[in-house]
Amino acid sequence: MAGRRLPHIVLFSGGTACRSTNLALCAKPVRLTRIVPAWDSGGSSRIIRENLGVLAVGDIRQALMTMAHGEGRAGDVVKVCNERLTSGTQDDARTEFALYAAGRHPLLERMEPGLRGAILNYLRTFRSAAGSDFDFRNGSIGNFILAGAHLAHNSDINTAIFVFRKLCDVAGHVWPSTAADGVDLSAVLNDGTRVEGQHRVTALDDGQGRTGIREIALSVGGGAVPANEAVIESLESADAIVFGPGSFFTSILPHLLVEDIVPAMARNVHARRIFVGNILQCRETRGLDVARMLEIAAGLWHARGGSDARPFTHVLANRQLLPFEKTVGAFAYLGNGALQEVCARLGAEAVIGEFEDPWQRGHHDGLAVADVLSSLAPS
Picture 1: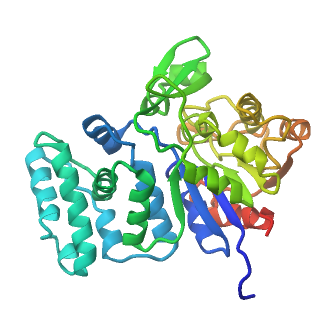
Picture 2: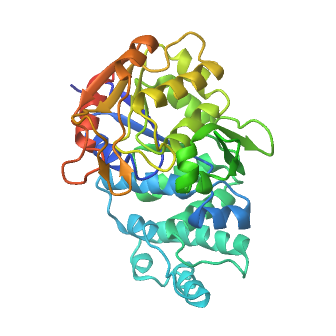
């Protein structure tokens, strides 16, 4: 029906784990907003953060590219933003970047002049800020463009994202949960060991993984991490707020530590709050189950201002069929544990289903998850 308001789904997520769900939701009659971490400290994002002192842009760019894919955007700008430089020598990578910055790449040469001019401006802004010693190897052109836009627009990441979306013709929204630069994630293990940096927490060795994570913390300059105003607005207008799938301790749970995020969700009494359990354990969650992860998230919810409101209205969990531990590669399937009991205590409804992709073991079936999410979102 013309003029019908589309339900707004806000998805707290990390990078690749929710890609299939994001793609499937793009095909649904919904408005979609992705909220991604701003504390990525590995790979190309780490190099950019350390050299330029700007917000980590890798997860933002990746989510925007997933939106572009889901919306069927495959133009030259999207193709350029998906390019990566050589992982060979530094000189070769610098030469390849210069090809882009000079506008001599075939994808850039055939673009409309206004688009090309904007991209070249952001690439050159990035090059000027990065300096002559910057290591471009294996760098994402999309990361360089987004970081350049961030710098060109007075370090306003929301404006940079707006421009990037317009360049790529992307309709869906992607916001980092905080617009603050230099946010750091740390974890304390159950034996008291402190692990600094998102990239270290997500790559715990076997011994650390078995020890387990006791708590996590976010900080910027040693203080609290302020919320991105665009995120607060998204949460206030949401019909469904979804947590996951994704790395629990590094991509999902830390969002609750950002100032004002939990109170904003608690104020929206209309929205469903949905937790999507992962299919497999990982280095961060070895030995945990969905029920225990819910308890951890609920504890943080109440500690961060969730008042008496129930943290989740629904929990999606993959059906458990076997009485023994089954593995895919190095990791076991994530058990549900005492899920029904925990859900009853928290006031949530457990939705048990076949959420594993039949073609990619250990991954979510994005369409199956999206079907449930869209059915739960009130319109």
